[in-house]
Length: 375
Image (cartoon, rainbow, N blue to C red):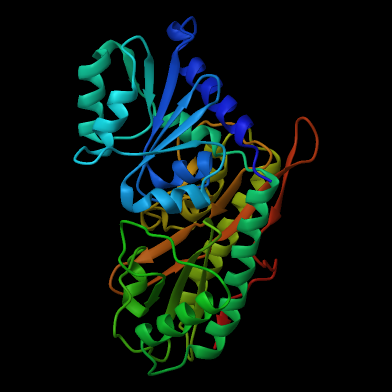
């Protein structure tokens, strides 16, 4: 089960490390308003604002329309209905004393302004980083849910192999996979940079990492980039496969092999790396040496959990320590404008082999002889 009290304790410990000059203050509170962190600390997903005090007591302020749902779904917190005619922010500010030090984990200007007016700017610290740091290390129940989402993704790729045919459209493939995912109990998390529940990008559309699924029909010789992100009980897994169909050119096969070898190089680096930038460098350097360095246009990976993209980041200069029970993706790619793209992505769980060595476990099905599958 979820360790609600430990989560709150970890949050305040990180806050004190980030703001050491305030460790003497015993009247600290944390204010949370984004759905992912509301869920993480209260098991409620919806509109609301959560106040956590240093003694690990919680108050969840919600509008009237959410009050009964909040009482049914939340745990380890008192539910307060916001006053009629007042916003959630006003209701929260009315609960604050003037002697508190507030850590706020969001970016809402109105909340920032109203709290500053009540307690003074010097007593408000903007601290979304603490929320992200706590969620990096996953509890067993979180790993179990991410694994379940991963298993459903694996089943969808089996469905996709039967669906991808010449003259079928990207949208038709997407529709089949969306239906199957929901039938299996998964849901599609929101992601602000694409309006599609999943990415089906064929031919030249594959050169856009976040392509919009279109009415384009699959053609002989295409590569099809299929990026599936699913949630199960709010926890997310993320995987990408690139398929070929029919008479795939030698150039496309070569690029696919380069990307796959880069992914293997990055995965293999987990055991010996001290931070995530080394994993990124392993993938990036192989692609650069193959002559496609300028065509690898995004980071190598990211954390997964309650959000599609969360800490840790696998990118240049990100020096965060690799720790047990982090869940990450490794997803190198090469994108040739107006021609095609290749991306291969797997979700992994970091495991400890010894005090000085890290291992990993694939959350998605992975084959070490993953040649391009031509349908």
